[in-house]
Image (cartoon, rainbow, N blue to C red):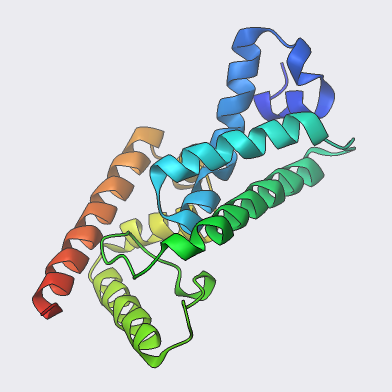
Length: 191
C-alpha cells in the first residue's frame, strides 16, 4: 500500500474513502507543520494555514512524476500561504511578542526599520542563543531537525531511533524552558 502522501500524487483526493482522506491530510500536516509554525509562531494560525494550503493543494495540484517533486511543491505552497498570512496580519503586530517561542530573526521584517526594533530583535536573539547553549545537545539537535530542517516528529524519531512521542515530549519541554526564560528575562528588563 502506498504512503498516504502518495495518494495526493496518484489519485483524485475527493474520490478517496474518508479514512484514506484523513490519512492523507495528516501525512500532509506532519510534512508542513514545522515549517509553517516556524514562520507564524502560533499553533492556531498554523492549523488554519495548513487547512487553507491543503485545500489549494487538492484543487490546484499539478501532475507530478516523482514524489520528491510533489513534496517540494507541497512545502512551497504551505510556506507561501504562511507568508501571505504574515503579510495580511502585519499591520496588527504593533510590538514584538516576547512570549512567542523561537522567533527566526531573519524572517521577521521590522515594523519601521527603527533602531529600537533592531535592538529588541538582537536582544531576543541573544537570549535565545544563550539559552540554547545550556540545552542538552540531543534537545538542541531536535530543535535543529524540527525548525531549521522542517522534519516531522516521525522523521526525527526515525533519524534518532526514538519514539515519536519522546520527540514531542522533549521538544515541548525545551520550548517551555525557553518560553519561561524569555518571560523571566523580558519581565525583569521591562519598566
